[in-house]
Length: 333
Image (tube, rainbow, N blue to C red; front, side):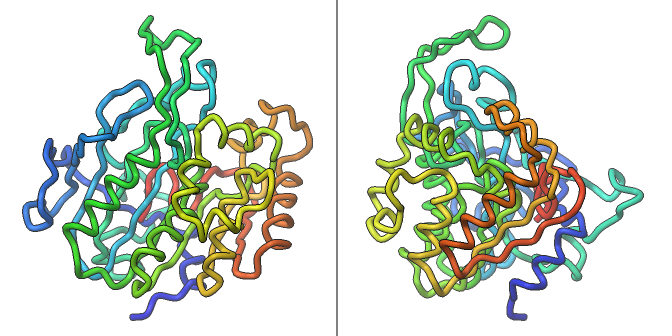
């Protein structure tokens, strides 16, 4: 079955879940694909990976059909200073993908991973761990001027999201040479870097059929703040490694320009934004950053900006104030 984008939009009406009943199998060295269990596997790649306070980093893999893979970039907080990075969940690596089971949703029910109706039925899954607060695009270090919870202290903040994500992506392609179809997905703060990784992977593997699904992406149209975040995270040094992407960034680029650059560099691909019109979490973020107008106005500003710069963008806006829909904290693929 050839995967099309329009049916993917229908996913927002379901919980598409990959629940597991036990802790993932842990690997402290990178295993081969054939060594994985059939359930979730937790891989600590070591090398130049780490969380924001230098705790060990891990990613998660659930193998199935090796020709079809979903790479999911979770959210879990954004930070750019000692003060903003001192709060959970930033800095804490979840010990497994956040999941939901049918027993958790007796009213909503849903299409779950073991249901053939699920468009991602029998896909393999790579879940990129997130514990750096940098939307997966950082490669910088910042002095920490704030105490941590429980009187712990780290002298520096390590925005290492890029190296962490690349360890997972490199492992995938080194251990699975059968991939034909790839879905790159993300939710909330994890979704903002996904267009960059679409470009990066398409550049390395142009023969792949690639789809993008961004849940919550594009909502923070607050350039004066998000430009500072990218600077703190040292994201420009990451982007400079990919000239075709970097050259599409406008002057004084900000967070939403990651999608602009990726879309311009890959006009044959479709990029997506799914969001609720009154997303309560983004409303709180906007208020914290000093924006008091309704969050729907900020979202519309972001959509207008993106669509004025891109032709290959599809958006889908729901009513209500839910935060993340198709993917979410239950990481529903």
